[in-house]
Length: 319
Image (cartoon, rainbow, N blue to C red):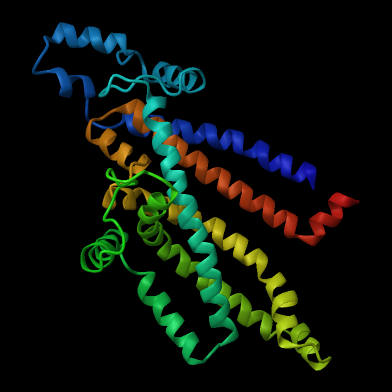
């Protein structure tokens, strides 16, 4: 088991290297020139060329890539071309806020998705099941941007239960309660589609388990419904839950990037949006690479958890 996990860890190294190559060269392939666009009205061509040389933008692409890769390990990604400040001071605080929102959205995805799917599965064919599947069909096709606007209109404008955006109330104390109020709506919007996908898979797993031969055997031996649901069906649907949750994290991350713009959440999505508008290559490259690393790590953790839940691998590791 340990060697199996170490092999998976080692396989992520070349994957991250390839991702860094793609991130760098795709960003460089854009037609924008940040120095020329920002300074062409203020400086002469000779001065602009000097600035390009100072930032290393006049060198071949492969040299720029190696320089950027080295800067990731030394000074956090270099200097922002538009803000003239360290990329690490721009990206990492925003990443922390994005991870907070992503963690809250993932928590809602797992808790509500499993609850909806489990209840729907054990009440297969009844009213609760039909209502849940209608919710899944409708909700999983809603555009995130439109849903965010609707949630703001209902919770902030009409009912005035939650703030319309931001991370803290400037007039408040900025405590945990204030943060939680600002977190509820964007986390729900970011999690909805993934939540309903998890619910659908959990429902299918519960129905399949309930119709299996071994569950019929337990029933014939007099086991109670609560014992069968909690001990046997619950244990058997755990791997599909872990697998589906890991696969939907990509949707959660994508949703978070859009949701941050809608709810004015000061996260990586807002930073990347501004960086793309200003062709700020160091910020774009570092921010996108961090998102990709988070996605790869989540999938790696998912694979490791599935291996730990696999009795054959556990037995092999113990042997």
